[in-house]
Length: 400
Image (spheres, rainbow, N blue to C red):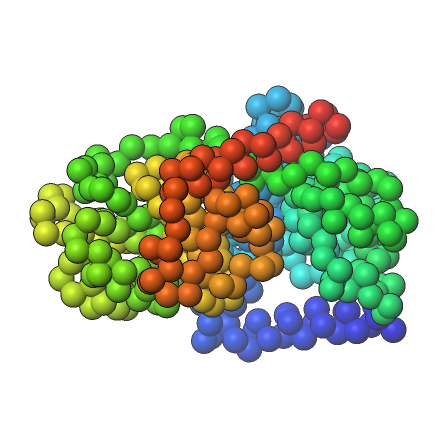
């Protein structure tokens, strides 16, 4: 019965993509991208040993990226197929040159799963963090292909651990091994009888540490922050975050400079930020020479945020007044206190940073001034990242 409901859900989602595609850009990209998958695979040279790595979106890709790089460097004889579920991952990384094929994962039907398996013939498969697709996992298990879960994290409220979760628990039996982020996740799996579990942490820590050690320099930003007593770098911000930041800056009497790298950089949103700033801001791409009166720099391009954090004294990570905060680790690796909004509970690293005394929840601009010993807090943030690194090395040593 659950299998029929699952298949109907997959069918319904695919039908909705067709209906929404004329009106929704992401739906259109996903629909068109999936249509080309089997053609692209047929054209690719996948002879020899193939490793398949699947990431739902861009965030999961960044978690899996240290593993991809380690495989490519240490075992270049393998071909690597990288699949995405979301356009936000595929469209950004479709030209990623460390893999042999980048494509969307076709809808999880029995026919697609078998056809994909026959086209790729993977020797090993790595699913990053949250992905569980019943038919793909079943085909892999039937064909005795090892499947590894990477940087996985489990919570008691997930369907696997409910009385009605038999269908979902069956998917877990298809995994050869679980590399989980924390002890509570391991305990939940152990409680279901799974002993093929190891707590190794999150491969994202390896990624952010590598980024910080090889980050690019931006002379314009260095010039902007030169001489500032305090620099706040705000990453992946939304409207509510930006209102708090700008209001705080206006009350700081010129001793603080603010760099905003918004989550969305379309023209309408950029204009909204500029209106809030009231003439205090410049856009990065339009500022070959910054005015001395400029105290807010708006980064209106993508791909820079992870390196920009190094110019700050304090980090603010956006999203905490919406669905949830974004990546805190990119900031933590540079050793600075990290502020974010109240919706952080689903993110382990945010909870950890709070418990380590390096992360702080804010509700308004006044909360920025209620903390002391910021340098000490920053040291704690960097120490947390350093201690948590090493998951990629463990996974590689176990499987290659």
